[in-house]
Amino acid sequence: MSAMDDARPPALEFWFEFASTYSYVGAMRIEEECARAGVALRWKPFLLGPLFTEQLGIQDSPFNVHPVRGRYMWRDLERLCGKHGLPWRKPSAFPRRSILAARAACALEGDPRQGECIRSLFRANFASDQDIDDPAVVGSAVRAGGGDADAVLAGAASAEAKAALRANTERARASGIFGAPDCLVGSELFFGQDRIEDAIAWATSSRPAR
Amino acid sequence: MSAMDDARPPALEFWFEFASTYSYVGAMRIEEECARAGVALRWKPFLLGPLFTEQLGIQDSPFNVHPVRGRYMWRDLERLCGKHGLPWRKPSAFPRRSILAARAACALEGDPRQGECIRSLFRANFASDQDIDDPAVVGSAVRAGGGDADAVLAGAASAEAKAALRANTERARASGIFGAPDCLVGSELFFGQDRIEDAIAWATSSRPAR
Image (cartoon, helix red, strand yellow):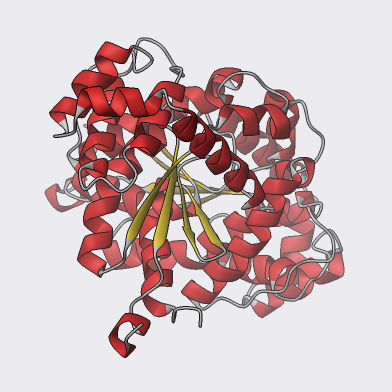
């Protein structure tokens, strides 16, 4: 590793859940924000459901379980999408089953179109109100993101993608994650799409571990 | 009302709870941020406990009930205080009983030293680890904020301050509040100290209601 490599800030891991509204807002802008700051980005899809069940004892989104929070969230999402210029349509089903999309994102690991395909999958749920548990929807979203739909759907069904998603969810739990999205810089956790800037500032002001 | 008055942005109400760590971070900077933007600020102390009991069925802070969230919050507070240059000492008791401090803040309504006294009360809890349920601590904090300690303590014990705090908590509930701090601009609610900038932007881009 050269001295120049050593001077690069640590990578930022973006932990997200395809069913999560605030993950949508974060996912749509994280790559651009990291690129602007010269911070390497790693996409980390995981499943929030098992963590909610374990930590809160619920089988549904907290925004459904707690309607006062839910009402706020839906209004807030409209405003945030307006602020960031993102398309938005309140999905007719919430939360949507996200395991297929998350496995597809795992199968896209290392593919230069991973980010574009992830954004396309999020748009399917939150801008086009499509069921991202449907392989046809996932294939079409991957294609729109420039990916190879057949290869990604086959990859999503593979034992490797299933194991990768389980491992991600386990690492999310071990990292102290309790919601989504999150940015993880080394062991520093930043919860919420509104803390992306703080996480990037943390990465750029940190020296890499030696 | 003159045309110049009509052109002013609507006031921003800052809803806060003296026991709340994130309210501390927000309270320490809201007045300066509003002043910079030319937005009128109204301090709105309320009690979060009754809302948590009603909405979540808990008698304690969610950060105690859910230890994963709690661990994150304490680390996050250290970082946020570092970012904003705020003094910070993790309180030895959490959450502290805040009703006396909240009534004192109500009694300070209309006093030009209200903001400074509120910040001083927050510092007592979160920078000096003092029990803000103790009248001596409240009196001393009010004095440090330039207020009349005897008058404020007498005011806090008055039926008016008690009724004002009850009315605030009732209005918080009716406004859809479920946590603290919050900014309310007209009927637009912004939850969390990290949304102060969004709330101010909303106020400055809004025309006053006619």
